[in-house]
Length: 379
Image (cartoon, rainbow, N blue to C red; front, top):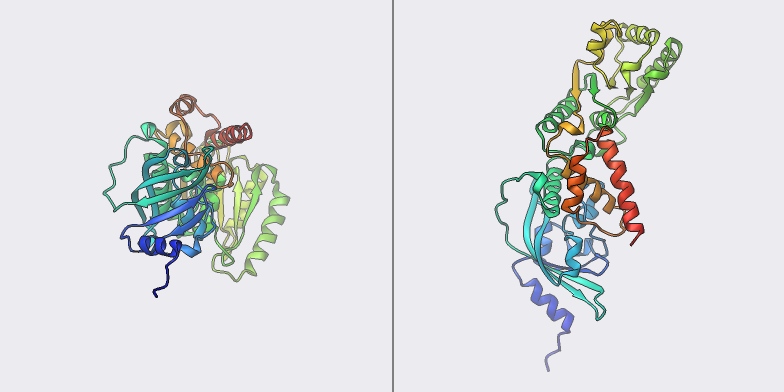
């Protein structure tokens, strides 16, 4: 007498025979099942994802299996829509993004509380040309972030390098060149534009560096005098001589345009010492060369600190980047694992676009973090 096949085994066998990926999340957005085609699509066994929460985020804060779980996360609102369509993605060969259309079947209990979600993934389709991001939907912005992370995420964290405007494309290319060249760099930009973050990306490189990369030692220019400059650089050079890693330590000279005259003289003297290599990444609000022309900065030091200058634009000059930045900070908030948010209402984005943002990206990040905290606390 033939053995009876259990219902679960029979269902699993049936789904494994399906040529397209199918996976299931529970009511808390945790991964519970993926068929054989799903494992082929994502390049991992479904068991590796079991129990992971699929956070709706492309912010770059997640790695490994958690990163994959975030890539396949559907928009949070589909859990309450019964039947819906959208897009999900998985990393492909070489880190490229493999986006596909999907159908979502939401399951709910008698009281309407979500029990889970069945995701049926379709065949690949050609991506549509990029639209004006000021008119993009939250789902479109999410996909743009995923594509940008796929392009850049293996080289460095996204952070305040998010954006598709020409100025930010230029900045990203300059950061790439600076990371490879290893020469002194001046990161120039207004307050809140992400100068220190860019400096750290240049020094630490992919994924924040590792044990082979020496520390980036911060030095506040405004607090320096000749004596403190001398003692700090002497100590640094001793540590540097003892370093055995791949990339040596470097100094982060913050607000170099505020460096006092006696400290300028001391630093210039160290840079002229024969045989001394002093890796320096400087940040400033004002051009050192322009200050030198006005007699307010040593001209030799200005050029020594800035063989390569990266100019960060104010947020008001980054046409079209704000919706993508806002979506980025929202999805970064999602990595906290609390209530998942899919995007901003058009009215909210209109309000953000109408403001001049004198505090630049830092001001935007702080405002959105406060507002999202307040919104989730009220629910």
